[in-house]
Length: 426
Image (spheres, helix red, strand yellow):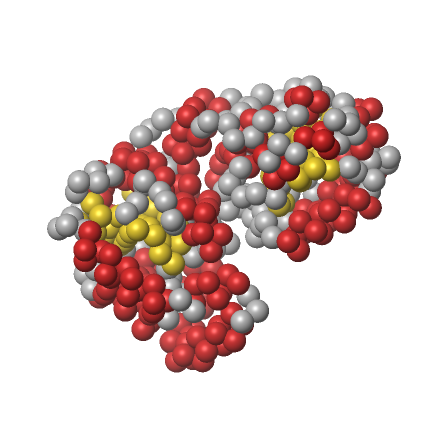
């Protein structure tokens, strides 16, 4: 608790510092600089178009969290609710804010400074505030609670290494979580974790993660935005999805060992590779380009395929696609026989469910504590843990005999319907 009190005291100085950092960082600048102008526009639009509906505020930090909200947003009665959708990430905000039928208005969610939180919630004046996955902040919770706004924390993933369990956060954790109206967790183990901080057990509901609903929906309804070249389809496709710099430190030494002549070796082995960085920006794409060139690989950018620039696709030696667009990874998994999911050498592995639904053979780095489904896949021998380049080499060259039993993972328990019911009843 003392840590947060100190944070409140120095928060004006942190806010000023963010203005300075924002001069050099687009993500901070996009959110922090435009707050007051944005808030005025939001208030004006809500006043003119909410038409007496109940205002509900949904928050998703980034694209992954927004995917979890989509099944809920599709089910909401638009005659009853006026939906405000907030984001932290400029990438997803710019992608969907101008036109989307799932919400009425989109905005940036302010950083956790008490005066901005107060203005944000006071101007929007929602009846309910829904946060998914991770992005729960003490200031936002305390202000919303003070203004008598119902707070729903859904798809909560409070794993044992979470910051909420740190000794210096325990009192603050108890204070924050007991201000929530409802918290939904995907498993009994996560509920048990929450009970360790003395949270009221009556506030916790076990409801499956809504990502399951969205992944199923996308696999059934999605119209393909990407058509791969024929020579890719005819080969074994390996996807490296949501990879970061720590994954690259394992991947490229493995490439050097297995594919000594680069694209020629890939052609000889009848393998193709799709590389998808977790963050897409010029620096990361250029870094991956340099590494691929260094290891004698010919590659094509996904944007070139989408733009029908097919002259580079005529050679069978072009067996690597470098993805430079966001939001397409979940669809690309359907083409793959093997999928290495990134993040397992840093904060934690990213979504293993997206490739799992397509029966991909799965691998990741060792840090899987954040995802119950990843641990379940390991326990059922459906996810191979990679700890070094040698293990990755063995995985990439092994015969693909794995077949994930997705019926056990994607149980249609109507999780989104259950959450919409909670929003209606409480």
